[in-house]
Every structure is written in structure tokens, then in C-alpha cells.
Image 1 (cartoon, rainbow, N blue to C red):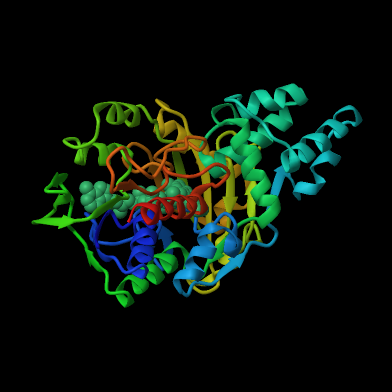
Image 2: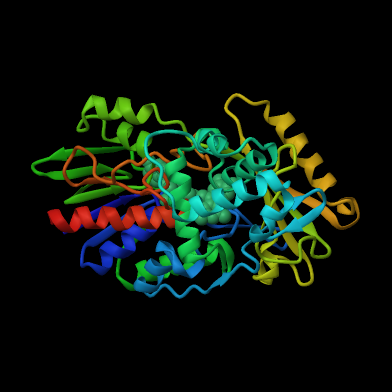
Length: 412
Ligand SMILES: Cc1cc2nc3c(=O)[nH]c(=O)nc-3n(C[C@H](O)[C@H](O)[C@H](O)COP(=O)(O)OP(=O)(O)OC[C@H]3O[C@@H](n4cnc5c(N)ncnc54)[C@H](O)[C@@H]3O)c2cc1C
């Protein structure tokens, strides 16, 4: 069986490695000169910046990605964040468990109840996380904490994500634990997967854009530099691009439905620091900052991402549709200076990266659950638009690839 993978982002590489393991003859086509898409390193002045991600895996080794990497024999160590997270409120950093202590007595119990409901509860329907919270409590700090969590992890406001999705995600955090940092950063994972592809005899063609996916005589005909024939096609190019590439074979309603999906956008600021500014490897949520939702300093766990003795600090902020990007960047930079009074003395901004349109934070907002199977038998999609309920970011991608593999195994 011949499989064509369109795009060598994380979803494409995971699908390719799994199918090669299953005995498929796999070819991967990537239009860029490097594999990894938004999950690889961008070396700059001795620092390992990234093409997208903040060098973190949501559930470290215990989530779907960690599990899949192990099953594939991809040798990547994922160092658990310590602590998992802190929250900077009125200039002090609090652990999650300490949050109820911040509230007046009348709200303390309500906050403890919300925490318990997030751990054990269920929500149905499309009610947003914000309106779900408003039913439990009226407290601005609670709403700001919620926005900082969803802004950091999903690039959405709490009002833009269904409550049932956040509850499912929180349950997974409670069950599996929080984030971890792969040795070598995002690039460490990409390299390990490319090594698996090589050892399994899969072919990776870089600088080769796929221009069309058609069907001829019961097989797929994929046009890149030349036309080739395959039994199945797995696209990692995102649902919209896939619908364009396969427009002659996919029903129009499908193309129309995916064209309505709006991605989630964000801004990442990477900062070089002469000393540790956080001093830990977890996420610092910043609910009171004007724009920044959270910050990490991954070099406390993986020092090789910065020159010896220095640190890489990264902030992330959600970017609203139609916002003035220049102004949003200015506000983000102002937040950094306010969060760290000694910022000017020890820190230097390395890069400000804006993620939107065809290179967003998420091609589909969390809570959109697209099936990996398209209406055309044998054509599948993987990547960050195909995340099953409760799984965020790269763990969601791995869970989506698992689902795609189940569909493929059932049919072939
Ligand atoms: C600022 C930011 C911070 C993030 N932080 C984290 C984090 O800390 N942890 C985490 O888990 N996730 C994080 N994410 C999300 C994570 O980076 C993405 O979800 C993930 O990298 C997307 O992978 P993907 O499989 O969708 O593929 P993509 O990265 O979208 O790759 C798709 C590939 O397909 C190629 N392609 C497209 N069209 C064609 C074509 N016609 N022919 C050939 N090739 C084609 C593209 O060039 C690309 O390489 C972050 C994202 C951003 C932007």
C-alpha cells in the first residue's frame, strides 16, 4: 500500500512514521526547505527560537504525544515542568492550589466549587466557558484567570471556547499532569521523528509543494514536482488547503464548511535573559497583564536552548481578529517591562512573531472537532485542526493522528 503525506508538520510526521511502521510505502512532501512546520527550531544568535510552539508539550511524557513518540521508538526525553504553573497576582506568584486563598470569604467556597467541578464535572451544549463561570460566580479575577489560561493554551478568550472543552482539558491535566519540555526543544521532537522515518524507509521530499490531489482508476494521483499514484493520502496542510488541493474530488459542501473555520491567532515574544527571570520551568500565567496571557522560561529545564549561562523567556498573547497588530505588540512589550521591573537591565528582545492567517496558532479553534476522515474514502486530514475533545495543542494532534490511524486500519 502506498501512502502520500502532504506536509511535514508534526501531524504529517507522526502519521508518516506510524504508517511506515504499519508497512505502508510512505512518501512525505513538504513545500518548505525544512521539516517540522510550526514545531521546530529556528536558531538565532545562539538561541533556539521556534517556528511556532513555546517548546512545551501539554502533558509531557504522559499524554498522547509522549505515548506515541515512545511507541515509535523516537528517542526524545521530555522533562516535566516544575512547578506545572504559577499565577502572578498583585506582584506575587501563586500555585493553582493557593488560588482560593486570594478571594474574600463569600467567594472562597465558590472558587473551591469551580475547581472541583473542573476536575469532576461535565458540561453539555455549546455554552462558553465564560458563561459557564458566570453561572457560578461574579468575580473579575476569576474571569481574568480563565482568560489567561485559555489565551495561553488555546489563543482564545474564555468566551470563545465551549465550557465542555475546557472541562475535558482540565480533567486530562488532573489525570496526566501538566507540561514538559522536550530535550532539544521542538526541534528535538522533529529530528527524532525524521530519524524514525529514515529508519523505516519512508521518503521525505523537501521543497516540494503538492499542487493537486485527484483520483484516477481507483487510486489517488498527487501532483508535486511530478505526478505519482497512491492508495491513500493524508494531508497535514490544514482543512482549507486540503479542500483546495482536492477540489475536483471533495463535495462542495465539505469545502464550504471548512472554509468557514476561523483559526486562532497569537503573538509570541522571545527574550534573551542574562539571568533567570522566572527561575522555574513551568508556565507563569499573567491574568492581570493587559495583553500577555502567560510566560515560560524553558531553559530552566533544557539549558541548551540558550547560550551557556543565559535564558530564553517566551511570552504568548492571544491576537483578536482585526486587531491593530503593531499596537498589540507594543502592549505586549509594555506588559513584559511591567511584569519584570529589571527587564531593561537583564533582557533583550530577540524576536516578535505574529501567527495568523495561513501560519496561525491553531488552524481550527479548540472545541472544533473535525473528523480525520473526509467524505472521500482514502483521503484523511491530520494536524491541529483535527483534535479530539479534551486534547490541546500537540497532544491533540497526536490524539487526532491516532484517530486517523483507526479509520485507516478499519478500511485497509
Ligand atoms: C505561538 C505558538 C505557540 C505554541 N505553543 C505550543 C506549545 O508550547 N506546545 C504545543 O504543544 N503546541 C504549541 N503550539 C501549537 C503547535 O505549534 C501546532 O499545533 C503544531 O506545530 C501544528 O502542527 P500541524 O501538524 O498542524 O502542522 P503544521 O505545523 O501546520 O505543518 C504543516 C506543514 O504542511 C506544509 N504544507 C502546507 N501546504 C503544503 C503543500 N501544498 N505541499 C507540501 N507541504 C505543504 C507546511 O509548509 C507545513 O510545514 C503553538 C503554536 C504557536 C503558533
